[in-house]
Length: 88
Image 1: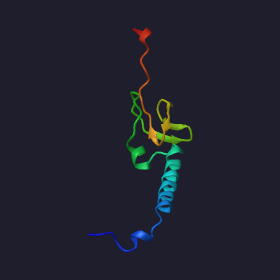
Image 2: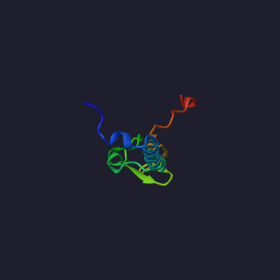
Image 3: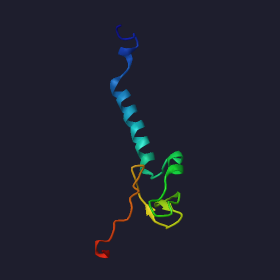
Image 4: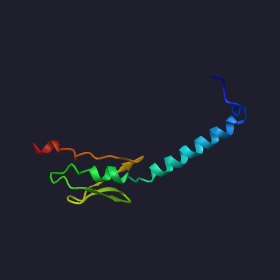
């Protein structure tokens, strides 16, 4: 149950750099604001019409109320508008 014979020939620093660069590439994809199409198909606006959201360069837009929700690190931030306390 020892290490395989090729284990000692792998430069650890090079492997670490490779892993870190792959992580950076994945992070840059997430920073693009793109939402996975399968998730996008499930998302709805919190407005009363509950319309589907559409991907736009500035975020996810409601096809009903035209509100745009930001996408932060690949995560949609879909929150209802805060209620106006002076409306009571």
